Length: 244
Image 1 (tube, rainbow, N blue to C red):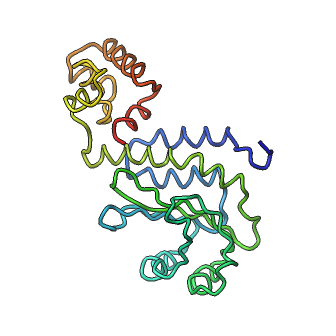
Image 2 (cartoon, rainbow, N blue to C red):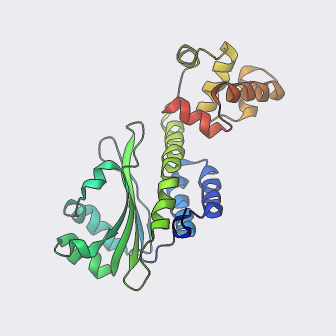
């Protein structure tokens, strides 16, 4: 792979460790934006909008953006922003706003903020629980986003979806029933199904052992067997498998 396209794997690893350590849903988005900025810097602002299935905004974070611009976006400008066909495909878009110079969104909203280039992650929805996007912006004085920047976000995008899906499931009580797990995944013993269901519910190994009246060592052994049966090596991987 050409050097200019080679992802910064060290930064990606740090990013995944950071967002994967978040345990409370309300901390996920601010932590995510800070982690993205450390990986792919943006000098003007980063605006995040996430809506639930009914279209209500459930999370919005801004970095370096005056509140009046956020309010203006929510009140009006999101209705007139250009809508490239690729938006519907859920792609990571590297946008040069000069191509939309006649747009009211560009003339009256982006230009006064000094925004010239943007990198957008669209359609972050999963399980029908939410949809949304992240927009990273750079001013005219900053270098454009590179193909490497876009490639980096392509790599981490599914992980963002998975981590938020898991936290959303815990927050809203969405989970799986042990009997359902066993019927859908016949490789599980009755006890393993119980352990797997509790893992999907966000319980620690100690909590699982206490709830099932087994030793912690036995709990670890069940988890090890479950991982082996489904070829995963982490709780996140297992939860994503069962909750997707």
